Length: 75
Image 1 (spheres, rainbow, N blue to C red):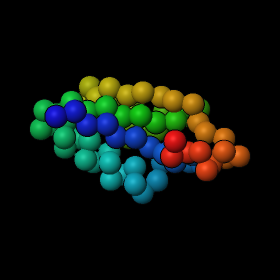
Image 2: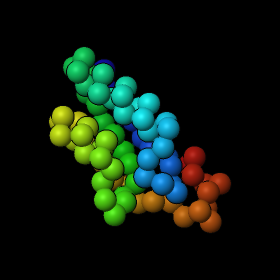
Image 3: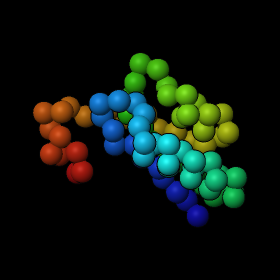
């Protein structure tokens, strides 16, 4: 099974939901699922994301949204 975990938090690099999907991503990877993560570009890679990458989980950094266009975020 392939799983994609994606952060949609634009104001801070890490929050409560990120703790949850990070733990789930680790569990899924240990259970030999294909796991991918997608997160916004920050000045520094969040520590937990670095931990996931060090395990071998593939990650994709993407451009952060503009808060002017927050209503377009789900699209």
